[in-house]
Image (cartoon, rainbow, N blue to C red; front, side, top):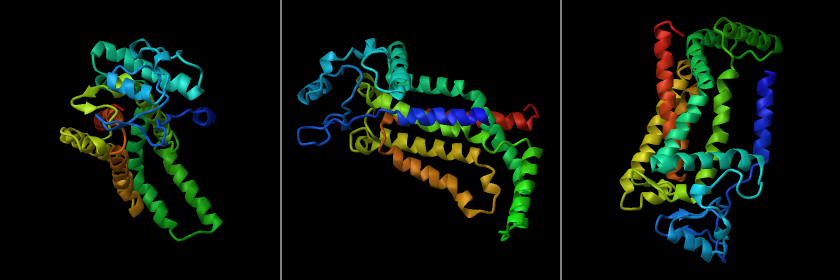
Length: 309
């Protein structure tokens, strides 16, 4: 428990010292867009744009792009120190995406590979989360009985007994209610770091993957000639999110609480709406992460069914 508290404190400190992407604005304080891609540009990019049109837009808006390193030569130590977040998380992620992208010849594919590597590194933690979900599914009928037993009883003695009985069930099935939330807590900082790395690195947001402009949002892309590709991306985000939540919240489907039953659907709808306004490169990361979760949970369920876990 002490280690988890320390981890939470470290993450909060990182977020408190976080820099952020700065939107590029013109002399009238209006956001500057690349008319060709429809992307709203970021001012504090970390390397020089490779696309001539993008380069000229930055020059016209008095951004000192000539002092920036070439993207393919970028190192995490380039530029001045900004914050713990930018210098030790955002810039290294951007560096690894660039480094790998040079070998696979596509930065969208590099985002997919880096996403998988992160999930593989986190696999021991995420597997425990999946195991906790399976154990919770087994324990849920007993927990529901306890909740019904004490329904409507708000006195201190009844609430104490209810907590004791529920803790006994958790102990019986070896469930740690907090342990299953660890990676979910880590996902938000990783998601934000990918967003900032994507938005601040021209060579990434200028690239394309399967017809998707990595820096363009589906909201803009749907208005282009390749609208169907952006529509497919949003559909994949919705489907993979739905199945990921469904597999992770099997226990909530067994409860009588209608709010808990609706939670996966509500979260899926929220993420679909959000995905329409986030860069396509970030959508690719999200789909990849969801697919990893689905495969991982399937393997955990299979191993439990075979009595190997």
